[in-house]
Length: 239
Image (spheres, helix red, strand yellow):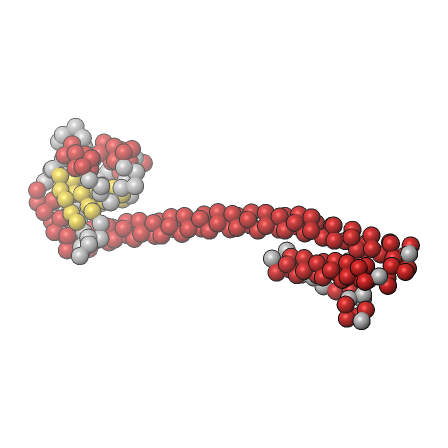
């Protein structure tokens, strides 16, 4: 079974270490202990800890206040709670300013310790979920922007292709119409009829391809005047 998290307890009193370790181990945490600040820093350099519970007044140079400051500098994601048997406002304010999450007074009742630790780990869990949701949201936004870019490029490409394809066909139809107006007798020539039929069919094919590609939806009022004129002269109409 995986531990709920890794906790380091720092105190120069073995009885305090044993009591805190027993309470937190029973909650399902992986608990380590250190008899002083320097030993705590060595352990933290060797492995990651989610939570540190440290005594404030310890006889060696790396006391609880210095340890809290060093943890905040090197491991800012680690929560620190300070405990002391000599509570005073002049000691509480500096450690809280240096990054401690809470300030507990010895002797610590087990239910108080459990409550403080549970609250810290619940906050860590919520922050982790928010961070994960934020990362997912940023990825979704990036994907959406990329998709919009692809769709925009697709529309521009289809529009350009449409102009390239429909331009010559429309020009051909206009030319045939102009010639037939100059020489009405051309309308009776089989080659003229066939050319007009093929151009109309090609125009319809291009429009259907563009519609299939999602470039636009053709409505009756969107069709060109030339297309309307020549649709009336479809093969079935000329028979």
